Amino acid sequence: MADKPILGADEQFCSSCGEVIKKKAEICPKCGVRLQNPSENETGNNEQKKQNKEKVEKTLREEWEGRGPIGKIVYVVRTIFGLFLLLLIAGGIFSYCSGEEQASVSTDVKSTTAGVVATATFTPVPVFFSDEQASAFLLKPNDFPKNWTAKKNGLFLDAKNNYLTDYNVQMIKITLATHETEAAARAAFSTKKSEAQATIDGRGISGDTLEDIKKYPLFVWNASPQASMQGVEKWTVIGVYGNITMKVYNEGSVGAPKKKFAIDIAKKQVDKIRGD
Image (tube, rainbow, N blue to C red):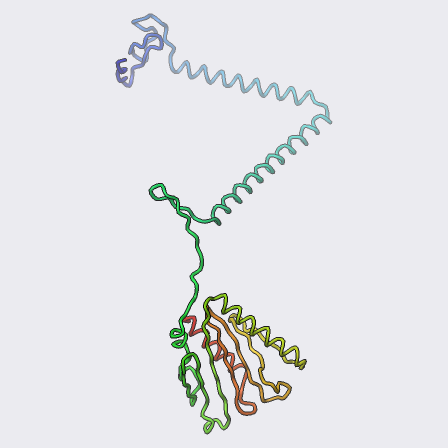
């Protein structure tokens, strides 16, 4: 079939024979069919729409006026209930769709390359250190107050003050230990905490408690066998990070060891291991 010719701005096709004729023509010169003016057609359609609208409005008005007082009340209540039910259903559908979308986001992410589907699972990278790395994390002399010295031997550090300057003896001993996994390190930490708590409970001394350090994986307690005597405390801080467990032990002459000082040193050691 040959393509129809392109119409000009003032041309149209005859609906009967397809002849190209002027838009203002009233009769097709080829087949003699009377043509309907486009404007007349649009006017007729608008008129028909108007009549249909008026007919619907009249029917609804007559139906409303024919209802009694009770019928009108029932109609209004039923309409309101219908709208409420519709909103309830729409809300349920929205909640379901939101839940499905959330579930799809929380599941494994899938990517397709050349027709092969691969599942990407996001897991935290284990924090694992060797003995050599852990040894390098031990504190240095400048991490301690003035007039302190520190000596390192593998995973052990022994620091002490100059008692000739401070007129008392105070010592800090730090011991690091590496474990095969993070889980093993946490298990060892939990065991040490349970043992310390059992010792404290067995002593039954008022005010003798185990204290967790806020914002740090540490706890501190008085490990002195003479915990009932004031001034001879041996403050011990136990910590864990990655596969490393840590012990900070603070002892010295009467009244020299301080819980706050032991905690501050332990925090410094954890920060150094974490790279803070």
